[in-house]
Image 1 (spheres, rainbow, N blue to C red):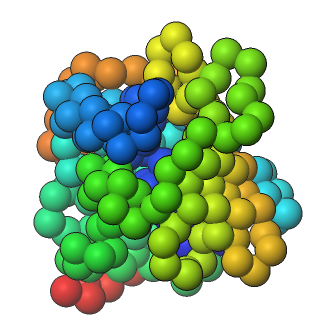
Image 2: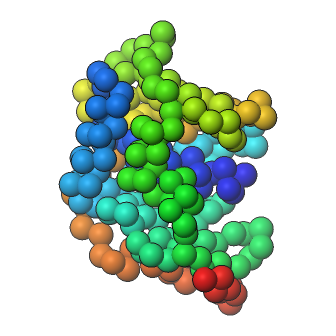
Length: 203
């Protein structure tokens, strides 16, 4: 569940600011908008058969942070710190380019454009652009349906259908752009985890 949560949150962040008209052109715009948006923050709710999860994310360029009861993760552009309540430790890694496609906003947007067939859904939610993404290669995700606000072009809801039959829905709210986010936002903050948590360097 923690892995699925982190994958969904970071992958969706790359699509959070635009999708309209021609999907490929929109993804190019999304990358450009995110890159020029400065600091971005939002709240999220993840709903699945395992229950609900709420948290926040922040990003600036390639850097990001996710905080929730299930996962706490910081990426400073080079190294990543990830805390798991299950293991009770923080792991430090240097993600590969492939790993960042599933976690980094800009890399995720580019990967969606290259790796998915994009189309408009037959059912368009009221006030939304509803887009369907089908991966070209078989993997964990079978398909993704996105609802994008027609007025603000912000991603509001996304439903992931997994090849194992599971469904995950995520709702993003309270977007803020142009937020001043100091570099420390994206580095490990010991105050966010239990005192005495072990930090394991896997680099």
